[in-house]
Amino acid sequence: MTPVPMDHHEKMRLRAAAFRVTRLYPGPVGELLSRELLTWEEFGYRLGGEQLVMRLVDHVLKAPIAQSEAAA
Figure 1 (cartoon, helix red, strand yellow):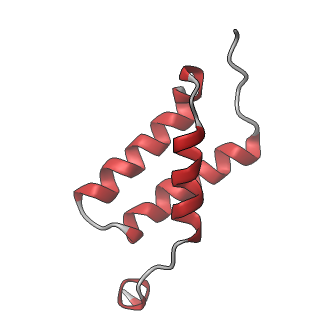
Figure 2 (figure 1 turned 180 degrees about the vertical axis):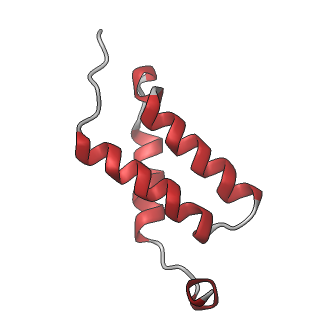
């Protein structure tokens, strides 16, 4: 089974989530999640089993950011 590269839209969603997750979860947790999402975009899709990663992307893109963080 040959992995199919992600299309441009999926890559942009991953990048947007990687940027946003550091504001949603400040500190080491956000940094770790951000790196994981960027790494997944780069070559993780080749491993298959993307369901968990894409659920994380959906969560990050839909979750509201606290007003105090957004104003800063």
